[in-house]
View 1 (cartoon, rainbow, N blue to C red):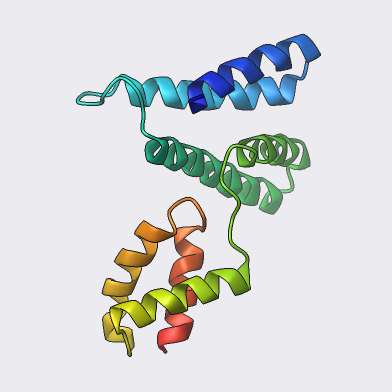
View 2: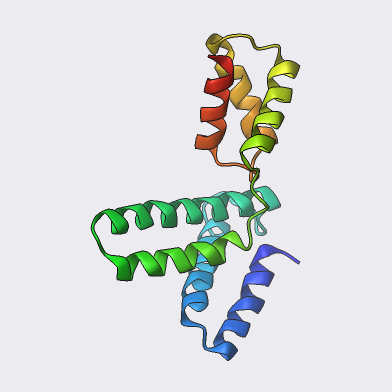
Length: 149
C-alpha cells in the first residue's frame, strides 16, 4: 500500500471520527503528494524515497513553524503545529537516537577512510544516502563534525 493510499484511508477514518486536527494534517500531506505527482517530469507514482522526503519536508516545516510560534508566545498556533507534527511523524520511519546515529556514522567514516574535517564532504554524501529517512540532515552533520574534529 502506497503512502497516498494510506493517507486517503486515514482521511476517511479521521472524517468518521470527526478528528479535525488529524484531518487537517492528512489533507496537507495528500496535497503535497498530489503536487509532487503532477510536477513537470514526474512519474505517475512516487517512489518510497520520494514519499519519505515529502514527509520529512512537511515535518521540518511544522518544526520551524512551531519554534517561531513558541518564540512569539502564540501557544494556540504552536499547539496546532505540534499536533500536525505528531500525525506526520506516524508515517516516517523510526528516527535513530543519538548513540545509534553516532555508531552508524562511525561505520561510514571507517568505510570511507576519513580522518579529518577535510573528508567531511565524502562522509556527508554517503551518510545522507544511507541514513535517508532515519535521521535529520542537521543531526547527521553535527555528529560527523564532532567525530572528525
